[in-house]
Length: 308
Image 1: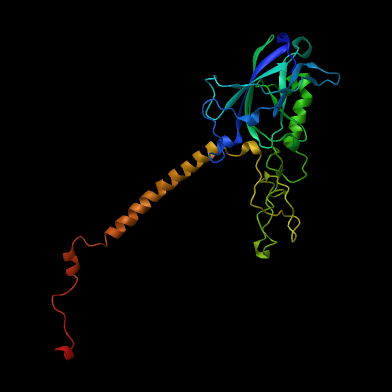
Image 2: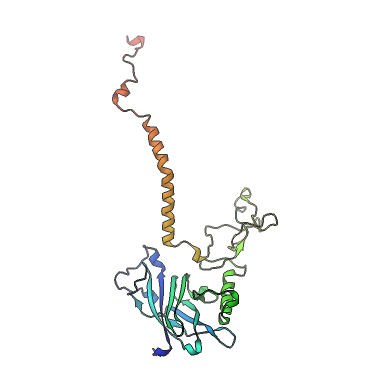
């Protein structure tokens, strides 16, 4: 391994989460100082992109590919199930300028949740933070590498020229091109009419009209999925058990648990008075003592003539 010149090194911290920590059944034993080995061994690579220095085409200069370093265990701000790794970028500030974005590649088969990247002691700038909060899948699933920008916001007219190309590239990725079927790892925010409300292929009686897209009813709209059309009505889309939602919009394990708890709380608020009413109504028809049971019957029963 080559030695990196300390004068040309940017130190950073990458915070991420393995997908298995969100599923207790698949969670590896990571007590104590045990390292999540899948994050090591050149499995995740980052490349910084300059916001102030452009190459010959006007795009921000891209630095060398850099892999995660060692696991950091002494960061007090880490939340449960988060892991922090050191990273050292070879970055000549005079030639490369100030970083404004970075590419990231995942060479593992499993996805992971990228929380943030922080660069420390950037010359003439100080600390630079990238808040990501996004799922990163295997690099082969993406047409272009995943990119993230610093927290600093710009008006379109004030966006640094070296970053404009990368901004438009990311915008086009999020918009999509209106073709293909959406996959779970995609982040495309494309829209379509509600043309999947019925199931005419199963039963003509289950056919439903298309909502949206007309002059009289332009809305509502839904997230485009690109599923195959129905055979009996090509203007409508077939249905499936999977409903596409951009990956980062899906509820995480913690949010799903909170959502379930809230639903149970609401259900209990409705069920409690119903159960109380049910118990009370039954109690009104019960007998307090055995004498109440005997009082239902007269003292003497008339016997049939044959028995007298």
